[in-house]
Amino acid sequence: ISNAYATGDVTATSNSNSTYAIAYAYAGGLVGYNYYGTISNAYATGDVTATSNSNSNSTYAIAYAGGLVGYNYYGTITASFFDQQTTGRSSGIGGGSASGVTALTTEQMGDAFRFIDAGWNFATVWALPRVGGAPVLRSVAADPVYDYYIRLSGNATTVYGQAPAAGRVTLDGVGTGNVTLAWGAGISAVDVGQYGFRESGILSFDYSMGSADDYYVDYGTGTLTVTKAALTVTANRSE
Image (cartoon, rainbow, N blue to C red; front, side, top):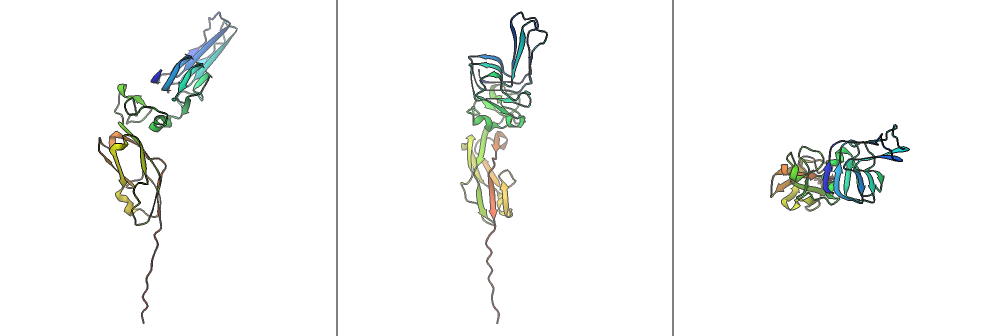
């Protein structure tokens, strides 16, 4: 399974009529039981519940529930995620190896770079809806999506009344070649202090392809720091 996601709720219950020694229930947001399978670039968000039936005819009943996979039996999972809030699960795997699965909050599921940094293809396969929410496959997207994904990094410092030096803020992501970054018109009016790049007038973007609405921008944690200018006082002595 690769480049897949599931949003529906999942419930599994051990079979109360089982005549076996043990009754099992496997519930996963994407896969119930992963038997030597390979899962990559996948996520799940639906509520996951697994219960063991106390009336089972079995000797005893066992239930496994995971945000992504109920039980991972020697399977290989890479670069995959689950929403720990909406799934109701703290672990992505109910039983077995849990490597390769990362828990995210609902807010973090809407952060494109959580997935891009894990190797997901946001150029042609995945996208974020402009209305917000978790990634979707471009081929089945029902709502308009962002076409490009850029992230700012770096810090800049300048003296009050002076323009910051160019090149102190860098871009990475999908579509960075379409963007020219410059200091905004509001720079000349800011007071001494520290400013995030998201603040109005700090930065200016010019797009060679598309418009601002086509771009998902992660402003990062970088800042512009404006320091005090030296004050020179010249006095004339009158006789």
